[in-house]
Figure 1: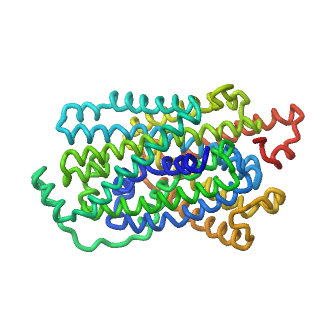
Figure 2: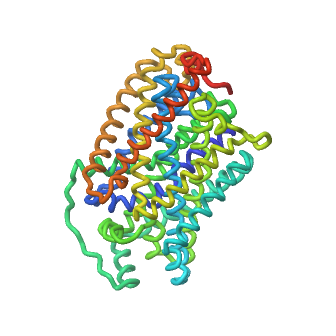
Figure 3: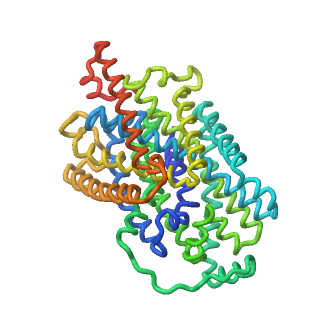
Amino acid sequence: MGLTALAATGICAMLGAAINVIPFMIQRSVPGIGPWVLPAYLFAAVPALIAALAYAILASAMPRAGGSYVYASRALHPYLGFVASFSQWFGLSIAIGVVSYLLIPFLRDIATAVGQAGLATMLETGVVRVTLALAFLWTFVWVNLRGLKLYERTLVPMMFLMFALGSVVIVAGFAFDHEQFAVAVQAADNRVIPEGGEFPFRLRTFLAAAAVLFSSFIGFDSIAQAGGEARNPHRSLPLAIGIAVLTVGTFYLLFTAAVYHAVPWRFIAEEALTRDLTAPGLLGYLLPTGWTVAIVAGAAVALINDLPAMLLAVSRLMFAWAEDGIFPRFVGSVHPTRHTPGVAIVLSGLMASVGILGSHLAGDFFLGVDILVTAMLVNFLLMCASVLALPHRNPGLAAEVRVLPQRGAQVSLATLGIVLLGTFLGVHVWKDISTPQPAWYLHSTSVWVAVMLVGSAIYARELARLRRSGVDVQARFSTLPPE
């Protein structure tokens, strides 16, 4: 893949549910955030940028498939590399299922906008929603199985279409204000939006919201996972990460600010308690039918783009494990002509299917989002730790670093990243365990711990097998896998 396809992989993995749903459903996930969503977004961007720089540093020295797994296993310890990336694989696979599940409300909003109330109601039924979500998911499993050419031809044009249609939301949002929205809601639903006064700032709530909104920036790591298929990877991987993070971060802030400029946060908070909200669905009160359909279609394209990009990322993690011998070897098998890791793609699709079913049974897709946030915060913490440890554990690879090669700058960046990401992780775990749930498996922290235990068992079994077969384990994890 060239620079455009790599950047598109990161951009499309980041945009989607993150921009069209999470900034508004955060009012349900973190009650009391109120008007502080945009500042929380800005705050969440800081550790995301630091994590992206850590990835860029490591990618410039270790451009291989499986990115984060390779970085942590060579800079810290193979156990940390596998277990952290195993939870990352699980979290991202579940997130793919969540995205597939969230696609259906956008179809519902299109049906509503064109006056098909019966179709909209049918799309809300459980069987239809789950079936359609599975159909979308496995369509893009097939795209990934067919190879990189079809992947690029699918992803890059849809990325540009996503930006074009998403820009309509930005223009429309800044073109209207709260008073115009209140008039439109009264005309459409005969409802009055109450005016509110000052809303207090609560630091704990703000940090909890920022930790969830941090999930919006997860996705640039998909670029690193594709390191084994990049042209000129030492240069293109870090550059693609930088392009993806800056492009998406700017678009996020403009998009979210535009919607909250037009729609009062009190209305969003009230509606989020009873139904899944989308940005186009909210602006539908203000726009003609044609424009509403266009922006809903743009949102649907954004979610669809998530699927092939994230499937590529998670399947390459599994491929890297198998190549190193700490996962069953057959998982790393590559198709002789399409050059795709078919078994890894299918297994990732199956786990994503579990994400669809879990979102439906839990009745709240935020469980999947919370699992992903926990997994990725741990993963990004380890990436910052890898930047600190690489020169000590593997000085030969550290000498290959081409992004921010000054050691003092690396130490400062990684230390700040560990502090901020550690704070986010602590707040996120506290929010999860302090929220009452009817069953343990509805706590994302409990699910994550269970996944880590499964990963640890797999690692112990496969490492013992390697040693019995006479493999020099220390030597294997001191060098990079073959290109």
